[in-house]
Each structure stands twice: as structure tokens, then as C-alpha cells.
Length: 442
Ligand SMILES: [Mn+2]
Image (cartoon, rainbow, N blue to C red; front, side):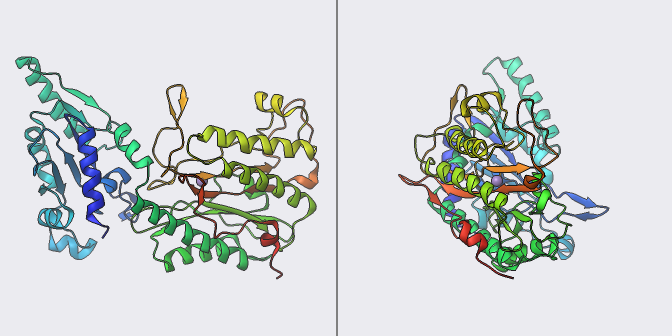
């Protein structure tokens, strides 16, 4: 169980920032896989961040308008020895108070009848509409009742607001304990990549490599992969979200692996590496790999306080476009190609995203007109790529692409902590130099 002090501090900060609004934050439900089988449980990251409570269906109330000692209320699935014999242990209301610091806890079934009373005196409700279909009708019913009362008494305004901006701003800046866990997640993820590269050889299946990397995650205590592992040989690498992983690894092709683990407390790694399956780059593969690596390393250096993610992307993009011009795959000036987007058949995604409890973590990238500035404690990925495939149409005025370049998909992705000065590359254990990618002979 994670350290309760962290959760207490987060709740205090959240309560403070809610001002007079009462927040309702639901846990994740169980999700059906098929028939009566369910997916393994995955807690809602907002709920986890504030509670550390890892059971489904629960609802947390944060009540800044109540006295100290009544501000954190949990509604939880009740103890039931018969159900627990089938589905596992539950803490129940008592456990929620004794082990998770709830001021008060109730069985979940009491939520509809108790929620209204808890909200009396709040200025409004902070609840995210559209994401919690089971809880939303209960919240809206209570809100309607409150609005009726307000209308009659005329005493105060009662609004419905979104708790996400406040909560996600908190989540965007990682605390020291979270940074420690992000290092762990990246280290284990990197280890899996090293194992995969050392094992890969022509004739193996993508699935076999997936098994090896995910075995590493599990052996090292992770829950499993943070997202569907992408193990993509050859042209499959040009399908950005390829997860079929049912192809064969062919001599002369590259293997792109985009995989990271999710830890017991949900912190995630997200790493991509690309290497030749037979241990030797072709000339074309090597040339494109050098372009991506150069772009990625330049972009990584820009992950410093005061810069923003758009600048990081712009640096990577400029290097990629320069490299592609030099290789004859693009034609024109760097500036005009970028302005016209005439590179998008070769590099069609952004260079990164926030990383944390969610793989594509929460937090704004822009506040109105202004890109969010990088601050110490933020974690993001830096992941430029080049994809050469018949899937993507060459725009008018750009050179058609010779067959020898086709089927090459390269992405290099690291997880980076914005430090006080230099960036800390959390995933540095996963090799990426040209030599390391060729440093094995089957
Ligand atoms: Mn990523």
C-alpha cells in the first residue's frame, strides 16, 4: 500500500483549491470483457491519485464546506464474505476509514439517500459530466433538488463545475515520491526493451517478442503492460497503433517496439525502440534512423524549464525535415515544407505527451493562446518518427518514393523528467545508439 501521507497531502491541496465546491470523484467500474468475464480491474487515475483505494465502484466526496474531520467521505462496496470468496477481498466501510484515511465511510448503496445532505452548504458541485454513467444520474438528481431549494430560498447560487482543471493541474507536476515511481516504471520498461532486442531474430513472431517484454514487466512486479504493446516488424511499424502483433520477423526488416509497463500503483513507462531484426541496418534504414535519432536527441535537450512542448516538437520536426531533404525524400525549403505540412506523409504525429498515472497523462498543453511552459517535475515523452509506406499518399510537388525506402517505420521514444536544469531521461537504460542497435549477431 502506498504511503498514506502523500494521499493526505494531495487531498488537502485539492480541498483547498475547490474553494467552496464539493467534489464527487467516482472510482472505475468493472468492465465486461465478454459474457460474464471481466477485464482485470484498472482504477480511475483521478480517484487513485486522491485515495490510493484500489476497489471498483466506490465514490469519494471532498467537502471543503464541512468541518475538519468530515471532509473526506468514501462510499464503498460493502463487506460480503460470499462475494469476496468469488471476487476477492473488500475493505468495506470500516477498512476505508482505518486503512485509507476516510473521515466517514458508507456502503455504496447509501449514496443516493445521503449525497444531498453532504452537499448542503456547498457553493456548487464539482463533478465531471459524461464519464461516469452509473453515478451521473444520482448526482444530477441531487443537483436538481438543490436547485429547487435555492430557487425557493434565493439564498445562494449553486453551480455544476468540472473538477478536472484543478485536479489535473496537480497531477501534471509530479511529487518526489511520484518521480521515484516514474523512474521505476521507466527502468523496468527499459529492461524489457533490452531483453526484446537481444532476443529478436529472423523467423520469430512479433507475439513471441511481446511475450518476452511483458514477461519482464510481470517478473519485475508491474501489473503488466501500460497499454497494448506494439511489436511491429517491417511495414507494420507504419501502422501507428498496430497491436495485432501476429506477424513474423523478417530478415532485412526493422522491428519497432512501443511498450511500457504499469506499476502496482499505476505509474507508467512508455518507450519506443527500433532496430534491425538481423542485427544489421541497411543503408536506407541506417540513414533514416540517424535522422530520427538526431531529431530526438535535439528535442530532448530542449526539455528544460521555461520551454514548452510545442518548441520541443518544433525542434524535432525541423531536424526530421532537414534530414529528409538531405536524403531526397522531401523537396523545398525547411520553412515552406513545415508551413505547408508537406512532410506529413512521413511524420504525422506530435513529438510527445505528458506521462504519469495515465499514459497520455492529464494536464493542459495550452492555456488559451499560450502553450503551457515546462516546469520542474513534469514528465513527458519525446518520440519523433519517420514512416515510409504506401499507406501514406505523397502530396503534390513532393518526390515519389523509391521502393528501397518502403516498409521502414522508425520511432524513438524516451520518458523525460523536466529537472531543475538538465532533463533527466528516465528511460536511458534502453539503448538507442546506432552501435547498440547493431550490437548483436545472431
Ligand atoms: Mn508515447
